[in-house]
Length: 302
Ligand code: GLU
Image (cartoon, rainbow, N blue to C red; front, side, top):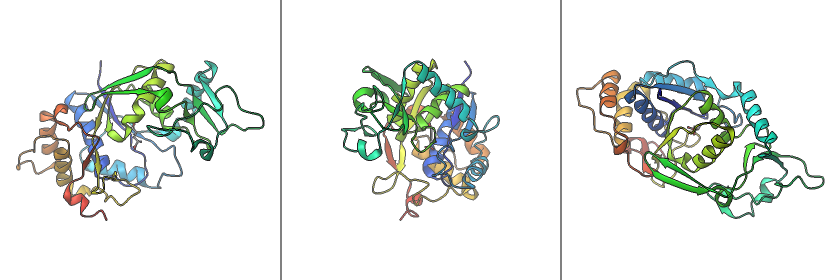
């Protein structure tokens, strides 16, 4: 089986340290397995997308030596595939329209990612209620994902999440559906990404099962946080990676990932990355969900 990894940034701002860590980890894992590394721009949530961010991310990755194979996919061009997947779920009785508003759901019990859906529209929309979203019906079983870094993650979707949204009320396709359809379409075998997505993974494995897709192997790297423990975000004040100082940023990302420091003689991107591929070992990555970003990055975060 050919190894296929991918990096799937949302173009909501410049590449920052946290996204560099995910990109580098997935690139190194793919190269160490002599696999392919694909790029997918996750631009479905148009309200959050920033014009010019996608080409800026692609340009920065190239200057950092993280060159992808094949042509980049853009989710905005793939909506027909998501529609087909939803249709399959609907025909199988696995998806239903939901008329609940955010405020109606706010009172529900808290789960791993917001309120647990209380099942209000499961058996049909009430009188006079309009469909605001499509949800997928979950079952009562446990889902266990054996993460290559974080170990086994167990969730019971019925009580931890509830029936979840696959198409949002305001139009866009939900991340959970799009990512599953695209990982399958691109033949992705290994997903290496930030641990902020760990709690989404059981939902993705569940959708893969419903749609008859094989689940990739997952490895979730720690998320870079500031001094208050908040995720460095593109929308926040995290500084953009400066490709002019590519070697410095790559060294910092390697250290963050627990990898041995490349020799001082590795002063150019190519040599540094070659060394890093040769010595790449996933087992060295700290099994933590979060980890402070390096000092030089934090200094510029207010
Ligand atoms: N687009 C997501 C993000 O930028 C990543 C999705 C994924 O890797 O599954 O956070």
